[in-house]
Amino acid sequence: MKSMPLRMLLLMLALVVVLVGCSQFGYYLQSARGQLDILAKRERIDELVAAPDTDPELRDRLRSVAAMREFASRELGLPDNDSYRSYVDLGRPYVVWNVFAAPEFSVQPRTWCFPLVGCISYRGYFREQRAQNYAARLREQGDDVYVAGIVAYSTLGHFSDPVLNSMLRGDDLYLAGVLFHELAHQVIYIRDATEFNEAFASLVEEVGVQRWLAAQGDTDSWLRWQQRQQRRAEFTALVTATRERLQTLYTDTLDVERRRQRKYQIISALRDAHEQLRAEIGEDTGYETWFAGPLNNAQLSSVATYRRLVPAFRALLAETGNDLDAFYAEVTRIGELPEEQRIATMEQWLQTAQSGLAVATAVSIEPATP
Image (cartoon, rainbow, N blue to C red):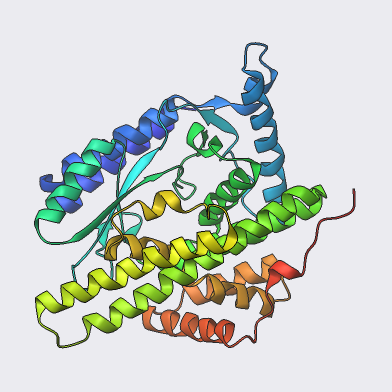
C-alpha cells in the first residue's frame, strides 16, 4: 500500500526538478515530504472501528464517515475508490496552510503554476511557519497577503486520500460537506481554472449535504444546515459587494494615497456591515474568525475563488433536472472548451442565475419523515 506511492512521489520529484529547476526544489520537497508523511500514517477505517482500543468518540465519527462515503458513491455519483476509507491523525489542526496574495490595488489574486495541477490561486505549505515566512516576503514586495489553515485537500485521485483529524473538527454537517467537496475534485478538475474547480466542488458539497440530510430524515440537522446556508449567503453577498466596490475604485484615476484611503474606508464598511448583521440576527454569524483577519484583496479573493461561480453551477444543475450524472457530463463538456469560451459560458450561466431564471435546488428537497 505504501511502496507504490513512494515510487510515484520520487518520480514526481525527479520530473519537477527537470521542469522547474533547483530554485523551487525546496518548496516541492516539503510538499512531497508532507504528502508522504500522510500516506505512511494511514489506518483503515474499518479496522479502527473494529479495534477495541479505539477512542469511542472517534469510533462514532468514523462510522459516520463510512456511511457518508458509501452514500457519496451510491447516491451522488462520486468515485468509488479507496479515498477516505482510511484515517490519519496529523497531531495538528490543519493539514496545510495556504498563502493567498494579490496586488495592493487589484481584486485579482496572484497565481502559481505547478506540474500536474496547472496554475492555482494559492500556495500551500505543510508547516505554518513556512507559509508565514513566504507570506512575509510577498508582503515586503507590497502585496496584500492572507494565510489560511486548510482542513483537507485532494490529490485528484493520484493517491488514496485519507480522512484527517482536521476534517473532524466540526459536526457531521461540516464533515459531510468536506468529504463531498474533496471527492468532487476527483470527478472534474480543469487545469488552470481554480475558480471553476472550487465552485463546482462547492456546489456538489451543497447538493450532497442536502441529499444526505433528506435521506437521514433528521429535521433538526436540516434546519441547522438551512440556517448555515443562509449565513453563508449573507456572508458571500457582503464580500461580493465589497469586492465590486474595490474593483471600481481600482479603475479610478485617484492618486495612490487617496486610493489607499478609500480602500481602507470600503473595507471598514465591510466590518461594520458584518457587525450590523450580527446585531440583526442576535447571534454570531460563524464568520467571526474570518473577520478577525487582515481583510484585504487577498482575503476577499479567497472567498471569490470558492463562491463566485456557485450560482452558475446551481443554475446548470437545475437545467439538467437536478440529475447529477447529466450535470457532471455537461460540466465536463464546458470544462473542455477553450479557456475564453469556457469563461464566457460560465458567465452566461451566472447571469441566468442572477436574473432569477434558475430554480434553487435547495428548496426542492426536504428531509423524509422518520
